[in-house]
Amino acid sequence: MAVTTDTPTDDRASATDQVQAPRKQRTSGANVGFGVIAWVVAIVFFFPVFWMVLTSFKTEADAYTPTPKLFFEPTLEQYEGVFSSGLGPYVANSVTATVVSTIFVLLLGVPAAFALSLRPVRKTSDVLFFFISTKMLPVVAAIVPIYVVVNQIGMLDNIWTLIVLYTGMNLPIAVWMMRSFFLEVPGELLEQASIDGAPLWRTLREIVLPIISPGIFATALICVIFAWNEFFFAVNLTAANAGTVPVFLVGFITSEGLYWAQLSAAATIAALPVVLAGWVAQNKLVQGLSFGAVK
Image 1 (spheres, rainbow, N blue to C red):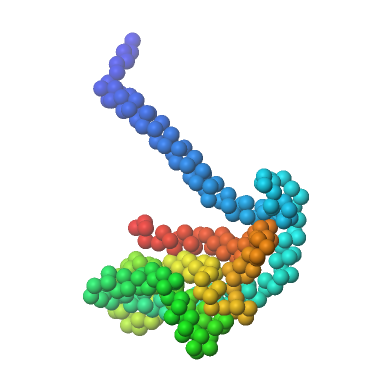
Image 2: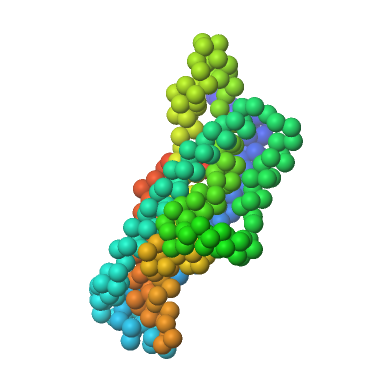
């Protein structure tokens, strides 16, 4: 007859399972709690965008009701009104200023960031602080001298004025971001390229840039968002010839009041390019923003 006895090992395993079971339950409960909180925060932040899009399909009468209407007969009347009111030139100006300024930022920022990462300078933190401090300058404090200079050289209501300003506005954050990406490139690759006799520009073009391309893409997308949404310089330095989409939106604020439905339609059109660009490039954007976070 076989006799079965409990060994000390079995007792310890059973005790361990009993201890770990409540921990797993607490961990599972915490994950559910964090998930619920994340969904609530996402809904709170997304609801204004949802309401803007919903309002854009209403008539002005439905948009002005004291009690918000969730059920109504949708119409494209507001979008037709926006396109018929001359949106095209403003979109063209925004695209030109955004694309050209972003290209200039990358052409100037990539060599600057690479140099700051490759050749250490004394008090690097002071150099980086200088770049970031220019980004922190309030635009209200700078608009008066900028307006005087632009007026004296005859560049008011000129798209190239916005291109220069957007380039200077986005260059500090671009250099700061891309320098951190360059620092993540293994130094052994640069040393090997130097031993093989590769010029510095070739090392940058054929070795470094392909490695950090997600970071550069993320930087470019952030610059695009900043330039596309910029309002203060555009509204103060441009008029009909060089006005951008944010300036176009101001036209719906009249002495008679706000045209909520038409303004919502125009704002939806203005936000759509950035949303689509972020959605299409979301993989590259996540890779770039998390570049170097995991070794």
